Amino acid sequence: MADMGPGHVAPTAERVEAALRGAGLRVTAQRAAVYSALATQPHAPVDVLHATVRESVPGIAVQTVHGVVNDLTTAALVRRISLPGNDRALYELNDPADNHHHLQCIRCGRVEDVACAVGQAPCLTPSDDHGMRVLEATVTFRAICSDCERNEHG
Image 1 (cartoon, rainbow, N blue to C red):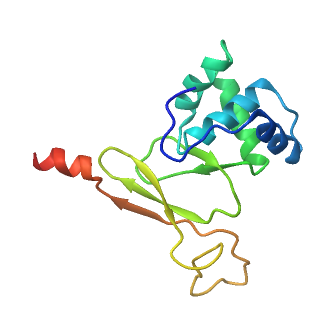
Image 2: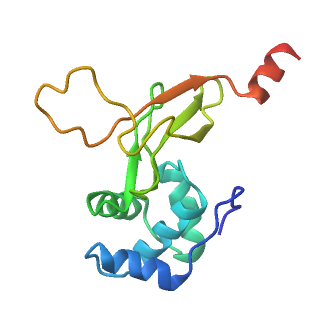
């Protein structure tokens, strides 16, 4: 499996199987590999997931990874993230108890999680809900990361 970032631990096979079954999905090698890749590589686009998954499922097609990501998203195991200026969607595991937003560098595209400022999901309340029940509030903080700032001035 690819390099894991800090705090991103590969789940056990039992945890992956339980998550898939709990969402009503059949456990397949492809689904398990994509789920595990997302646990260690949050904010990954499909091409990065494909490269990672090919290590454990040789010969898997990029279209298969697209299909698996769609299945996992439909089952609410995965969250699709569409960020301004990004030409491709990013994906992360969806934990309903994890109420967070994203910080995005406008130069290199690096994306980091940012805890919700206040309260439980959704942590933002619109001034007028127009009679709708708000399910989710998404905030993207656009910034310049310290590496890009250093390179710009160095």
